[in-house]
Length: 222
Image (cartoon, rainbow, N blue to C red; front, side, top):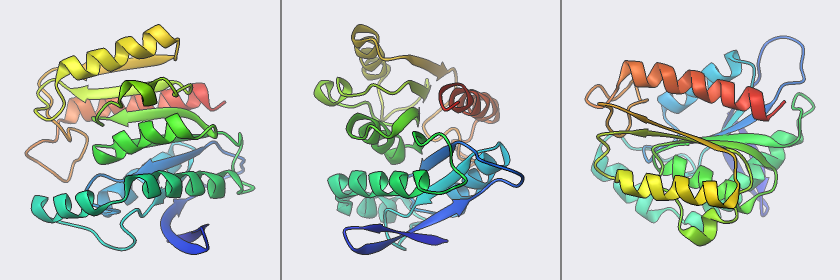
């Protein structure tokens, strides 16, 4: 755990640097509504093992949840604009590390974090590529601001994010010329990547989406 500065306040985050000689590309990993829990730290470590300096900011500042009702309360209490600003501060901190090159960083998020990753890409020129796991697409005005390449990863059976919404989002990115790839996994629900949630975890979709994500960042953060 480290801290980084935002408006004079120390914000906690989980930083993992790959072994070996750098520099390495940098990635910001954005939590689900559960918070900066063990699953997100594990994913940060996996990203580092794949060759990326990874920083997962703790947007709940030490709080986390185990049950959906708790998580919903934390997510509803989150000041979204401040969270986007804290993500930008995390990106600045990451880019300032000697171990990180290029200075444009990637950003990946899951569920609530997927939507925040898209918002960060829309409002921060430091974002060089984004991967969104089942995050709610942005409104058209914010989508129009996204210039960084977007990888969208969704489950066919996700009851919270209609396929029509994903398709409209993809069509807008196409119209505005933003590089993108979208994949909808047959038989996969929301949170198909989270191996700590057996009822929704989909091993095949998880493995494929992980490979696509690491390939995406290697391609666009070179």
